[in-house]
Image (cartoon, rainbow, N blue to C red; front, side, top):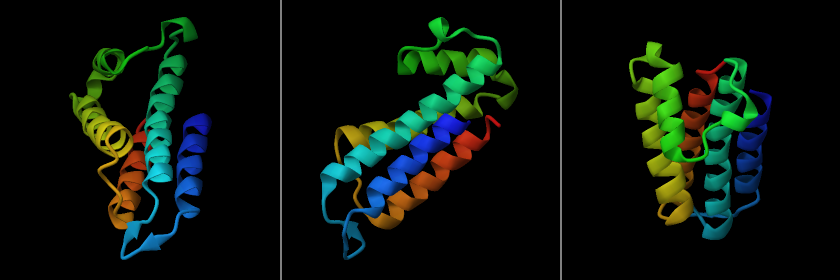
Length: 124
């Protein structure tokens, strides 16, 4: 999980450079960048786990649908909980945070980074 944690650390470093005013980050552009980086941390964690399961790099998922399918196929023991959590994090980090830039409250963002770390830790 080394690479995925590196991505997550990069997201935190991006946020650390942004001024906070009234509990909100003052500049949304780097916040969006941090969300994108945190989302990539999740995909890297899944990639690393799939490689450990014997998948070759050539067959790693190439879309969010591919990641959903991979979790259902290789991680059924979690009863769909990982796929559901991926869906939640996709909606929050990628769509609301990165793509649309709708999340800028510092406390909310810090909480989502914790949730991201918890998701990554499930693959250890």
